[in-house]
Length: 126
Image (cartoon, rainbow, N blue to C red; front, side, top):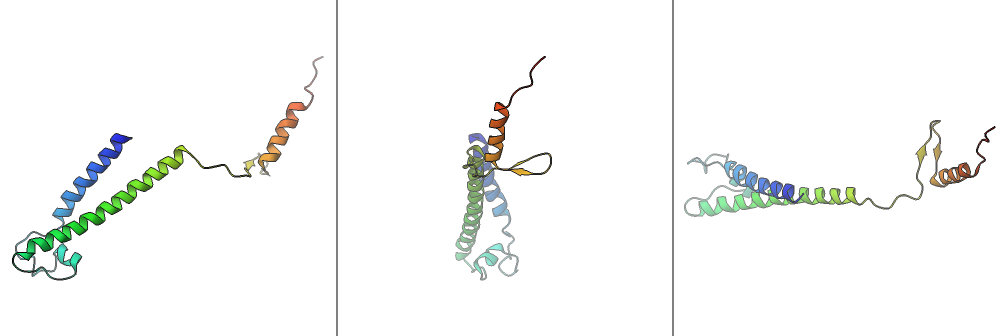
């Protein structure tokens, strides 16, 4: 289980790093075209000059944090589901068992019939 979790974590970070970085446009005129993902993420045009790198790195950091948050929620729900499957909660007060005729019996009726069946006379052998 630990190795599976480790592999999922490493795979998640690799996917975020590779596909998150490749999703950004890296052509030379991306500031003038409307396809820059940093422009879409930050809501305004790419600044000219030296602020360009900081602008794109902040957009990439925001994208990575959002993806990491969703991935951590997925891992949390998987862990809770696994813990719940291993240790189920208390059983309900009334358990229903379906008989062949379609009648529903409560657990009290079932235990009473079981107790009575143990105390009835067995057929005598002749």
